[in-house]
Length: 342
Image: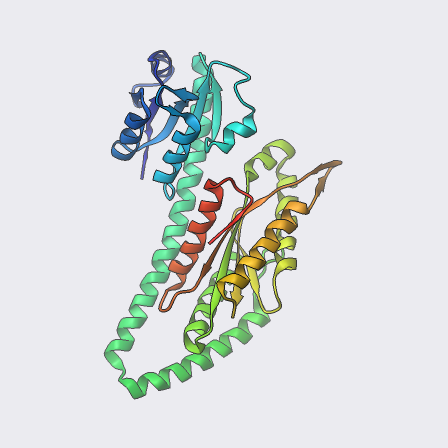
């Protein structure tokens, strides 16, 4: 994992580097890159976790450099803080659209830099925890599938395999009835809880393989959810999650499932659906969320979501399928948010 004690300053002026060093302890290591190509080399070779980036460099506007940094570290935690000496250089919303996480004016005082650094470190820790949870889930599912495959290869001939498939279908049907009877739901959104969602994902993947029918999944992630909590409070954040959960549920077909994947992420399961059908459902979710209005304590605001769609491939395990939907959702984020990608 990246070292949060490594900070890259990207600026054609050494003044900000000296000011940053003066405000931090000796346990933090700094490096300076004056050109965008040097910044990319340091990012890929030195692996800093936090980057303070001047708005414009001589050889590359910061918008393009931010985008390239995000693409290079799409699946790894990274915090980017933009720097500018001009207070009205860009609105905060425009700055965040470049792919940055925060903004600081220069020249900065030691206390202001230390506060921005602390905030970036806290966001980085949250990113790392989410990555670790996803990796644990994917590895656990992959190991279970590999073990099952090895046991089948060693113990069964062709006739026995046919009997096993028949038995598997009975087990799937039994599990389906059990899930329908006692599935646990997320209290906040009314959708399947994370545990019930994981069980449903495994069940539908096995059913798709046994019955040879298509299966699609949709990963849904709220855009800039942190700003909702910061601007309106955590209770407004809860109301936002309830509203998005209702939009997801109302957009699905009969026989589809959806659950809260974690935090502000949701996952929808579409049995029997090909990619074109899933894209239509995903666009229905996106437009319904965008058109909705959330009211809290006399204030009204709107939110958007980014969505990723993936159709299950032959012999693909649940973790790989979900990961592809997740990657498509990240592409939606990188391409501007409030869109659907497959």
